[in-house]
Amino acid sequence: MAELDTTRTDDSGADAIILAAGKGTRMEGDLAKVLFPVADRPMLWWVVRACRRAGVRRCVVVVGYQAGAVQDAMAEEPSCAFVEQVEQLGTGHAAQMAAPQFDPAASRDVFVLAGDGPLIRPAILERMLETHRREKAAATIATAVVDDPEGYGRIVRDDKGRFEAIVEQKDATAAQRGIREINVSYYCFDSALLFDALERVGNDNEQGEFYLTDVPELLRRDGRRVALLEAVAPEDVLGVNTPQQLAEVDQILRARRQPR
Image (cartoon, rainbow, N blue to C red; front, top):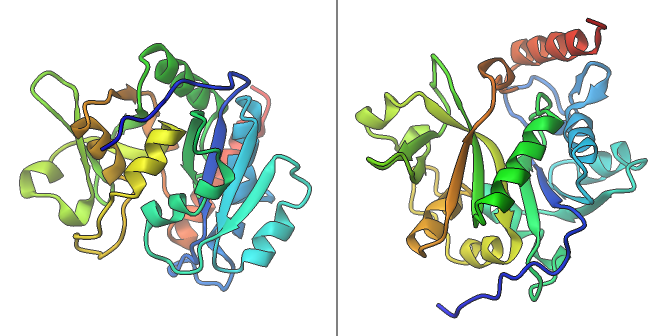
């Protein structure tokens, strides 16, 4: 593999790629998943808001199902650009759709985030970026330690506590399923290294998809630094995959808005 020039060419702030192409088959409705409302706003709006408050310069939103409706919902967000994932081939493939929005000769800090994660806090993004730059990492992953990790990708560390891999629930061994440190889908990457690694991601897994979660392991094998930041509170981890979880997240966000 040719050596990539990863000298940063612009220090004005990070960009973000937000994955927002899915339907959400368990949500009991025809809306694109990221358009389901929580606390009176689409889920995607909360993610973009967190990015904006953390100083993110630009959000590249990867759309797919109901692409036009998603774009219309975010029409008043000048920081958003949109790219389309026509075939739903996994999170790695979705992130790769954003590549034309980035200068391949430049190296920028870029978050990759899920558009259906409205509980994300700006302070976590700020801490991630600070860690990413301080450690000169190729990738920085925010993690959480939870009592019940069922359904989440597990963070596998080596015997020195360093990052080794993210293993998805369906691909995990019995021992790995016992790990309580989980991936919450908050990433910060060097953009040039991200898109180079995405070209090498395969789909030899239970789902037959191209996983974004394979990228940090590829970077580690390349000898690059992958930083872990155990920063996400367990109560902020709740995913939104059912109407019941949507209602719970709605309550959490409304409570956050109340004066203390």
